[in-house]
Image (spheres, rainbow, N blue to C red):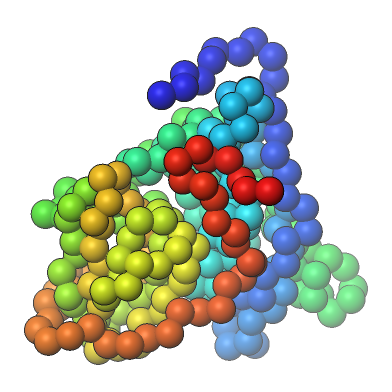
Length: 266
């Protein structure tokens, strides 16, 4: 595995500017019922030297996947405050790489969230925060099929990273109280008998049965949002066959990568 080198120079910066996501964010009644546009401007500090030398995408961060993951979180959560949204997003971005990921850890994040329509044209409110890895300590849970990283929890929702060990599976189950949304982070997952690409999103109606499997030889991860936060008694094992639930249209068109080389095809 390539080694990420200690450097004395300032870290490199990958920026995403002007990402716009329609989401629920705000405390006023009209903001709780109708999505509104939220602009995201992001700077990620990290070492890109190995990626530059090897041309391996997995040695850096995939900004298309990052943009899609942030959009997924904003669309799945219903934040009351910009401060809460910024706190949750930066915690996710600064979390250590998931099991099975071979990428450098992000060394710092500057995140700016802007609500262009919030004041009806009489000003544009925004929040900018800067966070580093020392600001983030995740709770970890062990499961029969792998591990769970608890990224963020409030009274209304929880953000989790589910890490499925090679050859393991999350048994067929359904939820009757939680509203659950999930995004595949790895490209080796099988959902209800069908292999799915990284970045695919499913939102599970109450009572719909689903099953995750990892037949690959690498850990595979799923980004999950539960509202309310995870309720153990609502992880109800089921019998029979999985239900057909169509994936959500992608936020961005995500292209495949040659897994053997990590180089984006040309």
